[in-house]
Image (cartoon, rainbow, N blue to C red; front, side):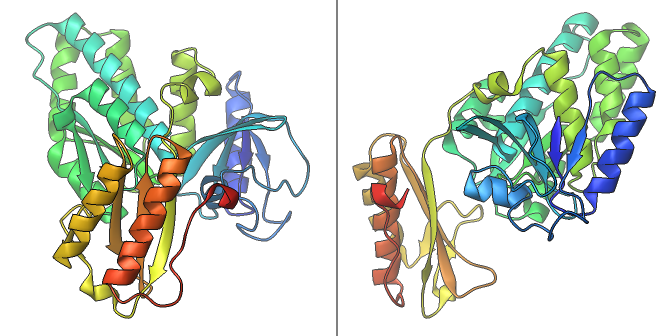
Length: 349
């Protein structure tokens, strides 16, 4: 497993972790690349570069084979995975990580329920995403967990963390940028304590008991997430491309529109719909309908710049380009845009 450490603090810890794994006789080797002495922090490398650019990192010290690889960010609280074979590149972002973890947890909880029987209290397993999550991941998660166990929260770790904590006994959240974790509520621990009196030694029970020792529930922790993902893949006998094949991302586009006053834009609680100006959402609804079944877009004011952020996705790249261009144009015309609104065509890709 090749690990791009973004020329940051994670490098030394990946080296130390690999040394520990080898002393324990583990088959997995972690190859740490891009250390602090190799190049500038986060420049051309790291999780943000890989996720936003949908391209491999720059390798400063050597050029490893990266069939199975991960990129940390500079302070190691985010991680994304990727695979590069010749000119073929596959990105597995936070949405893909959430899907893998939820798929695993669902199987293990179901297996434990089968072993313990009806005396096992029900556990609510769910996931929290933001509006930026790819719609294909949301559809897949709803098919695995049930629609009621997939929530959309306001953008920002503090919002998704709180929602996962409050809504679920086992709450998973990952933003698309690879920042996330799994939270375990009191009912999770009491359930496992009961199961231990009935089915001690059960393999699903043992795996669930070990998870809180592996997962950092307080913050995003790229090394904990790396070990968790790798363990799941090994237990399920999947490689990275099989994991990537669980669902196919919809084409999506993001842009920002400069406006005179971003505060004139108001949204609902999870930022999926615009509440002010009211005519803007009406026009966005028409644009989504014109873009075809499953098309989606939303706008939200930036928290740091005087801009409005636009997200669009649809079934095809052409439909996505058209929807993103139309949404940006609507924001620009209705919300006193500055300059020329962004536009997308196939030549931009």
